[in-house]
Length: 78
Image (tube, rainbow, N blue to C red):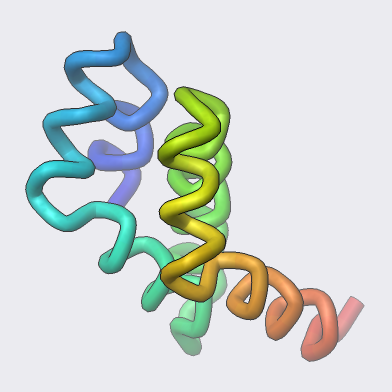
């Protein structure tokens, strides 16, 4: 997941490439992983993708990204 998160932080074409392969759905699902390392990478990736454009940000919101992030916050053991 780390490499995908890094690609999503690249240039617009690189980010679009991972999105075209289903990255938004993948990362939004991984926000609810039981593994902290995967959650961390999913958060980074969702943030990288959302910062690329408002269209991508809105796609993350439509696909449940905000609910996934709220789940993390509400269940934090910090």
